[in-house]
Structure formats: C-alpha cells, structure tokens
Amino acid sequence: MPISPQEILETIRMIRMEHLDIRTVTMGISLLDVKGDSIEALAENIYKKITGKAKNLKATVEEVSSKYDIPIANTRITVTPIALIARANEEDDLFPIAEALDRAGKDLGIDYIGGFGALVHKGCTPCDIALMNSIPKALAKLERVCSSVNVASTKSGLNMEAILLMAEKLKETAELSAERDSVACAKLVIYCNAPEDNPFMAGGFHGVGEGESAINVAISGPGTVRSALSRLKDASFNELTEEIKRTAFKITRVGELVGREISAKLGVPFGIVDLSLAPTPEEGDSIADILQAMGLEECGAPGSLAAIALLTDAVKKGGLFASSSVGGMSGTFIPLSEDAGMARAAERGSLSLEKLQAMTAVCSVGLDMVAIPGDTPVETIAGIIADEMAIGMMNNKTVGVRIIPVIGKKAGEWVDFGGLLGKAPIIPVSSFRSDAFVRRKGRIQAPVTSFTN
Image (cartoon, one colour):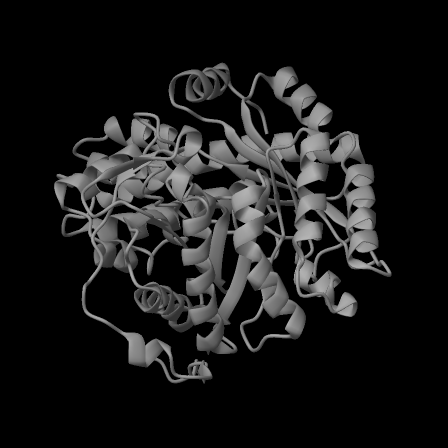
C-alpha cells in the first residue's frame, strides 16, 4: 500500500504532539519444561531459562525504538503461571521463586515480570493456595514481580472461596506496604476470563495454550484519538466512529511494524498486538478527555456508557483492519489514578465506584487502579471483586480488579503513587455489609449462554 507524505507527517505529529507510543513490548516465555528437586533448584532453573531466552530483549527493543524514533515505554516478560510449575514440589512458601523472577528481571534490565499467579476459577490445588499465600510478601518486598489470579470464568462460574481469600491477601499486601501508600497492590490483578497473551501488567502471564515464546506488543494512543475528535465538534456519530477507526488503524500499524521487527531480530515468533487504548497521567492523554471531546461535560455524566461503547468498538474495528494478529485485552482502559481526567471526574463527583463498574460492562478491563479507604473490611472488598467478576462472567468478557486499600487514608484524601501509576482521590465505598454473603462456601454457577435476555 503506497504511503503519502501527508500520512508520514500525521504519524510524526501523533508521536511528537499527541503522546503516541508503544506502551510495551513483552516477551512471553513458557516454563512448562522447567523442573527442580527442591524449591531452590526450581527457582534457579527458572532464572536460568528466563535470562537465557531474553538475554537480547532489552537491547533489541532499544535498537528498534531508535531506528524508527518511536518511544517504547516499557519492556516486560511474562511466564507460565507459577502455580502450574511448582506443583510437584509441595512447598508452602513460593517466595524463593518470586525472588528468582525479580532477580532475572533486574539482571535483564526490564521493567516488570508477570506470571507469579494461579488459575483457580474452578478450584484450588494446595500449590494454588501456597502461591496465593505468598503474594503479599512477594509484592511488598520485590520490585518487578507482578501477580494475577483468575478466580472466575464464563464457563466455570465464580470461585467465591478464592475471591474471599484474594480479598484477604489484597488487604495483607496493602498493610505490608502501608508506608508507601499500599502501592504493592498496584502489582496485583484479580481476573475473570483472563487472556493468555496479555502484554499489560500487572495481569500479564504466558498462557498454557501459548508456544515456547512470543513477542506481544501493546499500543497506546488516547491523546491521538482525543486530538482527532477535537477537530470534529459538530460531527455525527457515524463521522466520529469513522475517525476513530482511521486513527486506530494508524496506531495499530505502528505497533505491528515494531512488533514484527523485534520478533524477527530475536528469532522469536510474533504473537499479538493488543489494541487497547491505555492512558497515562499526562494531560491530554486521557480516556476521560476523549469522552468530553464527544460532548459530555464530564466523564461519568449520563451518556458515558454509550460513549465508551462507541469508542471501544470503533478502536477494535479500525485495529482489526490493520493487523491479523490481535489479542490480549483489546479494549479501553479506564484506570482511575493513571488517567488525569478520570481522577478529576472522581474528585468532582461525576464518577463513583458504582459508575466505574457500570462502565466496565462495555469496555475493558475492569476496576483498575482505584484507591479505596484503608479501613474497608475484607468482606466488602470480596463483594466488590465478586460484583466485577459477575460482570465478566455474564457478558463473556475479560474483566479485572486492581484496587488499592490505602492504609491510613480515608475517602476524599488524595494518594500519589508516582510515575505512570499516577495519583487520584480515594473513592468512597458503600458502608452496607456483605459478610454473610461472601463467606458462603463453594462457587456461583456458570450462566446459561443459549437462553439470553
């Protein structure tokens, strides 16, 4: 396809003026063949495999970024969920493996390593329990390790016992990092219908259906979309949709180009481009600002769900035309603290916890980076998680919960997590209790999918 000079200039403007970047290049690595006679030997063998496979990753990413003058914000690694690898060792504490992951990430110079997790949507093995019990210490003490636990799916239902346990571990993680505003919770995602090829942290892992390794790329671009829409003040919905599709096509082509070149240089198969729009705390790079460019006074105003549904669908349609290898989350991220417009809306009262939950029914990817009062009871946290999981289960979509009970702070106070994690007001939580409900045993059964209404 010929490329016009105007299109080249547009791409340069998107990078220089509108915050377009590649959010992350992620190498997925399978650990299914790694063994060890002890937990220490297993941890060392995991370290050796990761550092061997990814020894040229960072340098290659920097080379391609420099060649095309395209910023690449993060370089990351995902591995097979550790609870699947450690089952034969029958250990109660999997912290040594988390330490090995963190050491590998540090030695390779990458930003995060994901996969210290478990898949427990239908039930828990003793190793799954051991891993979940190891999460608070791993996230509070280590810098790069990220964790995710899939506790629900459309096919299996909601594992309510795992949801309650993860609520307890989330609170414990918050307490262990209380002196840093409980920021360790930002490295933990609780999932329904977790994707196996997700390059976004903290929820990334290398799924069991994946190959030996893969290069996955995540694009960004809220600033680019907002800028395009701001030039269409009186446009119809059809015209808005077409403009978003054209912009998403251009953004995705950049991701595809970068991902395939890195893949070829490393000799690692290209995996997917994740089509998600991912905001940053920088002004002008906000999903909330896109909704306002469509005509809403503030994100959260009536019409917000319709606007974000239009946005999410148009991004997918434009991106699908640009790449035949899409996957991961591929939706619209609405992290509260990582989006200056979202944080502003929460402060002004147009966004509540319940409104955010409603919005996640029509976009990816769940309650993300939402700070709540530190004295929120464990049972209430479990209820919030269960509500979000139910949205994912009933709508057959991926959702996650990444909430942060900030120990020592109350609703209305602000918390600053720094860097890309941003800052936000602590959002109020309902004072009505759900203790008796969340402490029931068993699973909430999977829904009937052929009898819809």
